[in-house]
Length: 437
Image (cartoon, rainbow, N blue to C red; front, side, top):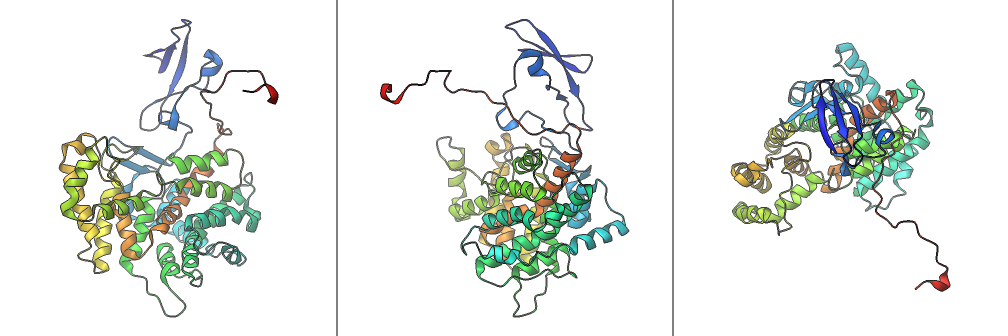
């Protein structure tokens, strides 16, 4: 097929085999490239599009997050991520992502109170945790617990009731810190800690993670701010694999707890939520600064399986705007904890410097991404690698919930049903057992 744009803001496609032409409208968003509306393509031509990974396919309209990967831009409801990370806190950003506008003082106070007083889990859920093996992966635990919440909070599973959708949204955002912290505590064999209402969202999470009943726990303001910033940086990221999974599950009318559990399962994949753990493994493999040239050479070798983890991004073809903030946060955390000679940090800084000066990486726009430093931060805080992706899920819950709510309110929303290019056997006759070769 050949393609050319007409003055009527449409695209004309010509099927060279039949000579038939059709005109498909071009749709314009607020910013970003226009998209070709191909919903009538099959009915007019008998053809589907083929787009593995949906890299050139828009699956929905959304007003939540915008990414310009070429320019390194990330906006939530029009606000740049660096401004939000510098001037806001996570509850304020959560309100923005959910409701579309930054809250005033009264709205923020009420929102924080509503979230805070939903943070406890039904006491019976504590027995549900005890059904898991002690050495279960924390992601398996939180996926199971979140999915099971529909059995405990069935008064907020009617997706056709706006009030129930709101209650479910607040419950999920409020309870995820408790869900994640309890999964960590269970893996250690330590008692669960209940939420404390006088603490911030991030501070309460840190306390439930690291406090014990034996002594008082004082939340470090620096670590609290760092955790809050990490949550902001991971709150939403447009139509990635886990968000698309939430929308796809939700398109069938599934309850919100099932949809978020589906998102957690998708996030668990190492190509999505496990990248910061892979960065730590890579730095450990390199071992020391003087071995960096050796591994840079291996990364350039197309016949070598080694890859520089934490560099480059599926969407960003420029410096990930979140990475600069994460680098600053990393230094703040290490200084607060008195870790002045952290070998992995020195290694990471030098690796970043060399890669950014190397023509091979620069020409391919393989810049550090948000995962490059986050693993070092988590490690410094004492968070084990198995819990890294759980923190990602905790932060991303607000984005998933906002996307789910937006999808349900979209008049164009339909149950997801991708097409396929069938490459199996052509029709053939059934062969009885006795006549098979």
